Length: 463
Figure: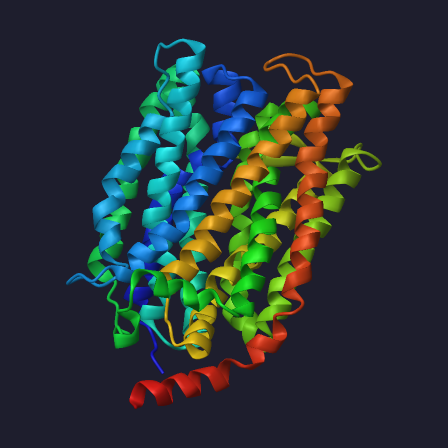
C-alpha cells in the first residue's frame, strides 16, 4: 500500500490554494454583488448570465475529462495541466472584474464571455486535482488524507480572499469599488500562478498507466455504465452545490438588506475557515465509522445550521453578543444568525470533501466492472460538472426570485424582495441539502465492496 510523503500532501493542497485565490471571487457572492451593485446589471440579467454560463461551461466537463484520459506527456496525464493553464486561468479571472466603458448590451456580452472563459479554464485546471488522486496512491485511507489536505488548501485560499478582498478593494479603490476590483484581482491572480507551479514541480504520478487506458476516444464513457457509486456521488454533489452556493452567494444581500449589517459581511465570509475542523478530522472519523455516515452527518449538520439561521432571523432575533474581531473593535453580533452560519460552515468541511475522496473509489469500481479506468472523465463529470452546473443554479435561482420580487440595488427593499432574499439565503439551501442526503444513504453497500474490488484489480494488474 502506497503511503504519501508530507511534501506530496502539501503539494496536493497547493493547487486548491491557487484555485481559490481566483475562484472564490468567481463562485461566491462577490461576483453577483459586483455584477448587480457595481457593474450595473439587473438581478434577472445577472442570474441568467450565471445560469447560462455555468451550464455552457458544464458541458465542457466531459470533454475535458476525455482530454485528460488521452493525455500522455513526460509529466503524466493530469499534472501538466497545472503548468499549461495557470496563466490563462489567472488572466480570465482578472478580466472578469474589469469594468469597460460599454453600452448595457455590450457589458452583458463582455460579462458573459469573461465569466464563461474563467469557468471553462477552471474546469481544465481544477479537474486534474481530482483525477490525479488515483495516480498518487492506491491506498483508500491515504486518498482520504490527501483529500483532507486538499480541503485545507481550499479553505486557506478562500480564507485569504474572504479576509483581505474587501479591505483591499476599499484600500486600492479609495472608495471607488470599480477601480478597487480592477487593481485587486491581478494580485490574487499572480499568487494563484505561483501555487499551481509549486504543485506542478512537486507532484508525481506514481501509479503507472495501464494498457487498457489507451483505448478509443469513446471508450472512457464505458466506465459510467452501471457505476452506481459514481451516480450516487454525482446526484448528491449536484444538489449540494446548488444549496451551498445559494447560501454563500446570498449572504451579502441578506446582511445588507435584511439585517442592515453590511459591516458583518466580511466576518461572515471569513467564518468559512471553521470548515477545516471537520475536513481535517475526516481520516480519523472514517476510521471510527463509515465514509457513508461521515458524509451524511456533514450534510445533516448543514441542514441543522440553516434551521438555526431561520430561528435567529425570527423568534430568536433579539439575542446579541459582543464580539471583538479584526483590530479589537467591539461589535454586536446577532447570536443565532452567526450560530447557524457557524454550524453550517463547520459541517460543510466533510460534506464538501467526502465526494472528492470517494470519486477515486468510483474510478476503481468503474475499472473493476467495465475494464476501463477513466479517472479524468469520472472526475470531470462527477466533480467539475456538478460544481459548475449546481453552482450556476445556486447562484441564479435566488437572483431570479429577487428580480421577480422587485429587487433594486442600493435601495430599501420591499417586503416581497426581503422574503425573496430570505428564501435564497435560508430555505433554498435547506431544501437542496436535505435532498442531497437521500442518495448518500445508499452508498454503504458499495463502500463495503472496496476491499474485494482492490484485491481483484491487483490480481488483474499482476496478470
